[in-house]
Image 1 (cartoon, rainbow, N blue to C red):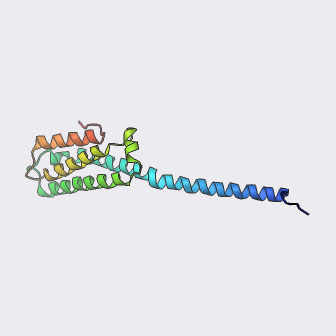
Image 2 (image 1 turned 90 degrees about the vertical axis):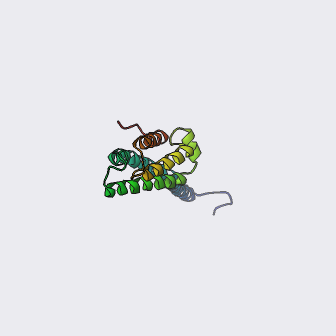
Image 3 (image 1 turned 180 degrees about the vertical axis):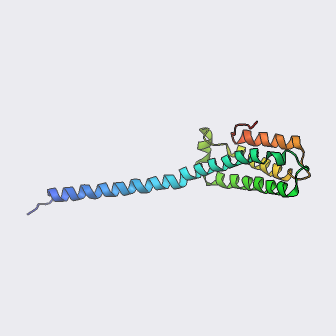
Length: 153
């Protein structure tokens, strides 16, 4: 017969096992929360900035020569640049503690993102017949600087 306060070896093993399983579940859930709400948004922002860097180079022949490009190509360029401006703003809002990451130099600041988005929209609007080549080059340089993209040659 067990007296109050006494635990058998079986009860001790069962309690230890239960606490170990609950601790493992807690660690799994906490890890998934960090991955879903912190790591994945940071990775998504890196992907968006990477696509912007790529398309600034790829579409340069179109936005650097406004008025000299066929309408089909300038329209496509305008659409892509405007989509990047939208994606950049959207992904920026998904990252918790954004100011901390920017302070650590991990991400562009909110003001840099805002400036890059404005310049992407400017570049989109200036790609057709209304743009000027030197203004578009200036916008590209500001985008690259704001998003910490290495300047293309």
